[in-house]
Image 1 (cartoon, rainbow, N blue to C red):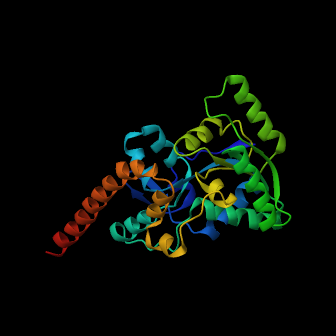
Image 2: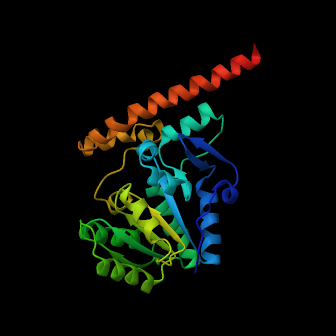
Image 3: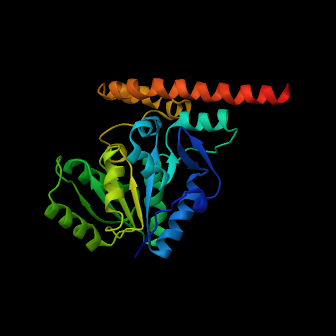
Length: 268
């Protein structure tokens, strides 16, 4: 199997736009699924990053994470990123592509194509409930394996055994729920060794889709207040949001003002 890590994402996915140093292609769920079909047909290994405000702001200081994001197919999970694209770049984004929903659509679509899925990450009870929930929701879905790794660094021997386990099942999709940025860095470090064509870090998608954590109501997802709902469920997230959201807002306003000042100067 060939491993493809594009040196410039724009050369592979068409027009891109910059949000604080991260190059995003213009995607929706359907175009993303079409890409996946091609990758599976060509048996090429690709990394997919699902980005939100936390990911983008963290990449300002974490150069390795920034590099991974720009060498992968990256989608916009967070609605504020859509607002940035529209306000600063005047790009109309039809829909964000978020992890939990993308996972459900791939599992559903995959039944027609016999796509094989492997889940990596999360607690054992979450994975068990996730597998049961997905089999109930999508009869005939092909989940070939799952594994809950220990909450510590793996030894070289354990790491090799994990890679062998995944490759033994020959999945088309490797869904990784280790939390960001751990999952992105794990996939990047193992991309050449794991044979799955599509390797995606999906954060809390296992918790949501297993039913262990309830997602925000649709109106909150569409209005950009999903983060507030998540804080109500898990107050520990408050620290993360307070560390990144104000920075994003300040930089968003900086870039929005700069774009409009340049426009006014051209018109003067």
